[in-house]
Length: 250
Image (cartoon, rainbow, N blue to C red; front, side, top):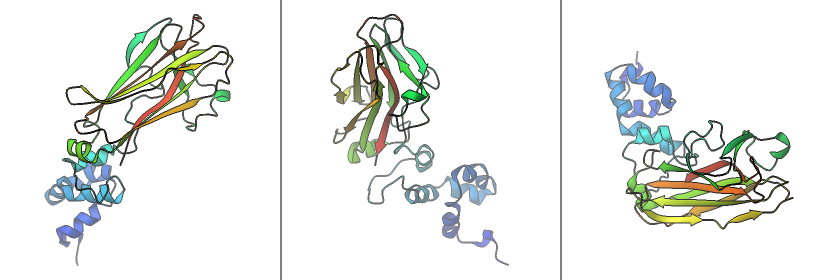
């Protein structure tokens, strides 16, 4: 009787490539020495990446670690951590904390209809003094690699959602820079200073910028946004921000 152990290595690689990655590593890899060696080879991970659309067949650029690339799947995934205040201020650097400082508030159901992501429950809010926070994304640590960033230069899409209160005017501004390995600026985007008057409709708005053809050397993305209220009221009447994102589009 023929068993799975009698299959040719090439056939076994194809079969194993259809097993969920977690089971492949935690279960299949422990079956025997042969299976361990197959799971550790590039072939299975390359097949999985291409089949699931993480990688374009016509690219002549390959990751150094296919397993890492598969597990991190950096394309179309939000690379910003804690974009909607669910973890407090974790992962964010508070650069300026004016007035009564940054705060976090719960998103009222009556004021959430403008945001398409229904999982958003909270937002960051600024005070009467300027408030700015930022985050640096390491693209290589997130599964990308130098040759891809330098040659293919996939689109880097930046989005942010902002809104004012109805009863208080405020200002908002977004800054994003693409940085080299030494953190020098290769390309940057700076929005205009957006002023929202008092007694506005208080609707959420999205700002979007797409980096492309930015040249070789990009290894980090520096994301920063800021704002404050224009009435100088104590408390948190300034701009509200949430659902921020930085994604890589293949």
